[in-house]
Image 1 (cartoon, rainbow, N blue to C red):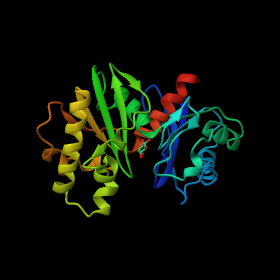
Image 2 (image 1 turned 60 degrees about the horizontal axis):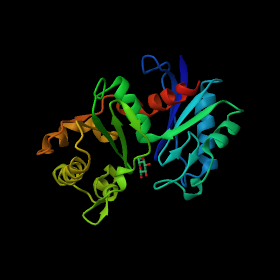
Image 3 (image 1 turned 90 degrees about the vertical axis):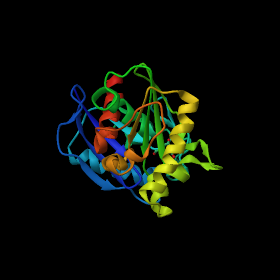
Image 4 (image 1 turned 45 degrees about the horizontal axis):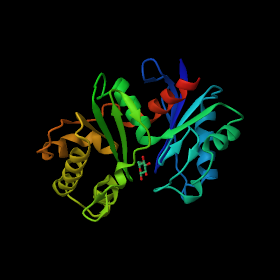
Length: 248
Ligand code: BGC
């Protein structure tokens, strides 16, 4: 089955048709820049551009960087325009896409779904925590392969600040941190999560997962193994399509 997946991120809106049985993109993905401010109307324009590029006319799954309930309703918008809060994103996108069936899922949850099925979490039981490091920190928690949706572990407090303000990739850039300095913060954050959840595995995703060799060797003293995500850039697109496939 093919489903269209769209990943709405801080810098780009990326999408492609996905073969949800294999987790592969059927065609090379298309990307447009995320408008700033990232308002509902502006983002919807970008989504329409990406979907129409392929002349797509089936179900569409989209990620959103905030809490999403029921595949539709946006409850939080930490790193995008606040106008999103209480928006029915399914209704908005479906209307703008000429009535196509739409499902919306949290971006980290989507990445987690894809990694658990096709990537670093394949076949893993017990508690697995996937974290995405980007503009914020996203989290996806799985228990025996089942997603506990909408965990927001990036907003846990670390040294008196929200963890994502201290340890996201953006924090690394904003504060001009070396890999060593940043890894110390990530280490402290992971140790805190380990104390709370005792996971069997941590999977680290987001753009930094491509540079795992720079910081993973610096992360020590955890009981759980820490591994980089495998699907990297496409995890959100694939996971969004997988989630939409459940209802298709
Ligand atoms: C949001 C999460 C999101 C994460 C990554 C956080 O600020 O609250 O919902 O998954 O950023 O985009």
